[in-house]
Image (cartoon, rainbow, N blue to C red; front, side):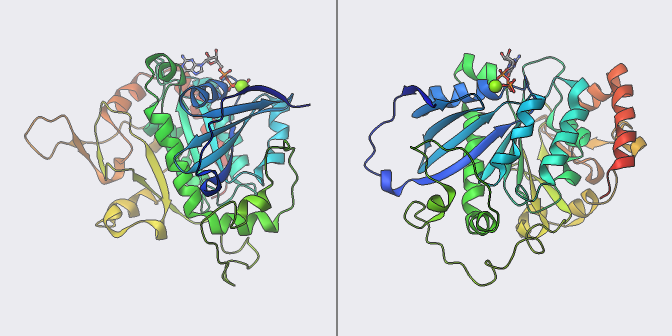
Length: 357
Ligand SMILES: Nc1nc2c(ncn2[C@@H]2O[C@H](COP(=O)(O)OP(=O)(O)OP(=O)(O)O)[C@@H](O)[C@H]2O)c(=O)[nH]1
Ligand SMILES: [Mg+2]
């Protein structure tokens, strides 16, 4: 049934030391998932297998052997996604940043996804694709539109990576998406113990090729050379500890609390307890972020002041505490939304009626 489309797998002496990781790449149809897979296939040593329901690409990146299932995003395809949740160690969710009309659908789909027990606790990389398009939303806008702070309401680590699959392919600048993948792998490794415990507690089957090992094997010390010693605490049934809804504090990866207005930056969400002291120094910023400030009207009010603390004209801004995700460019864009804004305002009303946090 499986058709081997290509095989350019290099012989690696370190094969036995590679860590096997399974990832699913999902998102609405037309968001660009398959183009990303082409990128991975082009720039990384890889092999592809495909069948009617999915395309499996296995790539080598650093010390990892990563099996990535590219699942269709149409309604029929989405019905099949859950079959893969338990198998996946982490998720890539691709969204079309330029498709304002479908942001509500993205939000509902993401909310549904993240509330699934088989997904809870697993790291998720959000690729905010099609940033090459004129009307593409910036990360700060997307965070607001999707209520990301709230829907990533479990122990999941979440990174939002603005990117363009097409531009990546054309310019051969694959850095953002490869770096995003590296982040996901590192986050998976950090969560590995917990993920194994989660997988063992859930029994789901997934179609696998004869070349793909099952999750149990992947979790075995032989195939995942990290020495796993399950403490009694880790072996406790999951659900109370790891899936508990907790407030999240967004942090800006590497940039601290500094934003460059013209630059698209990655944004990582982390749990309170996983934040380092210096990542939320002063605490006041994070405190304000977790306050319930996503009320309907406030979201669309023009952002307040931005202050450039230094006089060096370096075009960087320190952002007021209560506007962490506002950038001047986003501010300008928000001011010019018309029909789309109205539509999304309606969507927000729906969301507030249906979502409990
Ligand atoms: N402008 C632009 N177009 C893109 C980008 N990425 C993908 N596309 C286009 O979006 C369309 C859909 O891309 P696919 O990769 O097939 O989308 P998909 O998410 O795999 O869709 P399904 O398989 O149907 O779920 C194609 O016409 C791509 O050329 C991008 O970064 N910028
Ligand atoms: Mg596709």
